[in-house]
Length: 459
Image (cartoon, rainbow, N blue to C red):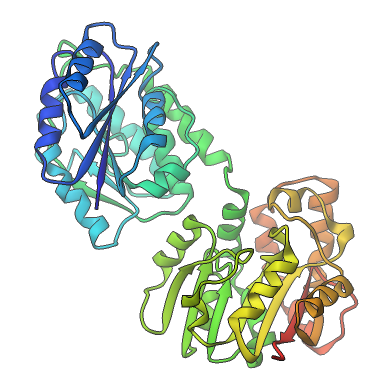
């Protein structure tokens, strides 16, 4: 795995050459991205000399003014070309030869993020006040996000490149460590800690962390806990607690699902788990973040495969080769602008006689802030949906509404209160209504929050 080493630098004239020598001496295939954050002590001049001497693995970016660690890291992220990214402080507190300990967890596909913890490995006996401040911030992080970090403020953090690029970072200074930790915890990624060595330095040596930075970190931890960046991802995580909703839906369609199934838009895997007793299950999504979540919950094997697939694009020959008799697509079509093309692509995945089981949001009058927050292009009427499916070449077998009882709640939240995400307490309340939702299989409901269409590929 190719490693990208990001080194934010500010007035490190005494250590910059040595830390670059140590990083270069590691055996990994790598690139080194140095960001000079407005140094005034001659560090920038040394970096220019090193560039001019011809260092193929070194790229340096210069900022006119000092804005802080977070700003420097953000400046380097768009230029990353490696598979993994590690943040390397420009001082000599951390040891690059210990990258191996962290990389092992990525090579074994155990982790999405690895932190090097200073307090479980060899470390210099150092300031008690720094230790106390680090433990306080780490404890606050664990309380807010229900985690078990031993050292959240460590300078050694390693990520897969895709994940780091997907995180919308804003903090400029040392708030970066708190913000990036809060963001990855909200995304529910696989995080590991490994012991590392630590040689803390004094303020006389040039240490820049100040006691006021504690308040900056507190601010970013609380902000990350209270704000939602990806509404769709947050909604999927919240829906994972409403297990009975998916169980009821599965009971309605279980007998229609064949032996070789592809799920379009598997998301967090909330419905995927009900399919696992089939001969073959192929989970797909167009989001790399969602695919990471799927890999956390399920293990790939000959009966379960994971693929990246965007239903708005024609499927690959690899997907068609699975000889699928069922495609399940729940709450995906409304996210696609050209839904007619997406339906044709779904049909091309099915063997002759194969079924598409499609669920979409219904009742156009309900379209509001929740739909906008979830990036829905539309809600469907039953007639409109069946006409589009017939135009795509499907033969309609059956249509019915689902979850009539959720309509009032959606209307109030989306059209009146104009919320962008469903509150957790309302989802918990919805679980109390599951007996009523179960009754829908025995009655013909005149409307529902969703409409379900069962269609066949007649070719």
